Image (cartoon, rainbow, N blue to C red; front, side):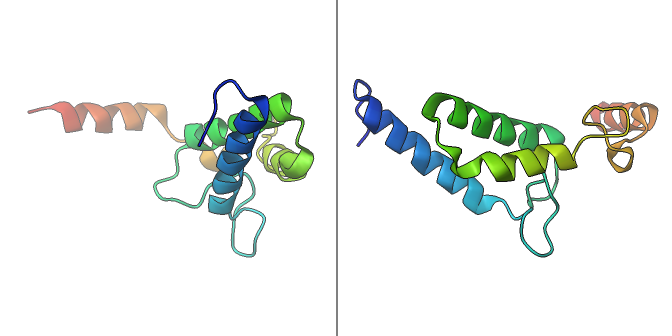
Length: 106
């Protein structure tokens, strides 16, 4: 049980959460895609939140267990203009807006 005033208890709970999150990730296994979580549909912000959480986990606990996998995942998603927009992940915004508007018409 988590004890909010015990630093060691908080670190243990964070370690359990980080382990559980990494157990879902298959980007470092055969058939997986580096930096992406394997659950369709894929939304980039979910991966961003997960990797951001792993960075925060390291920052607050100084546990280096997941630094290498986090680094590899983030570096693998850097686009040609040094952002996280890979050409294969881009989509036509105009078409997306038209589809969204079409879905909202009653």
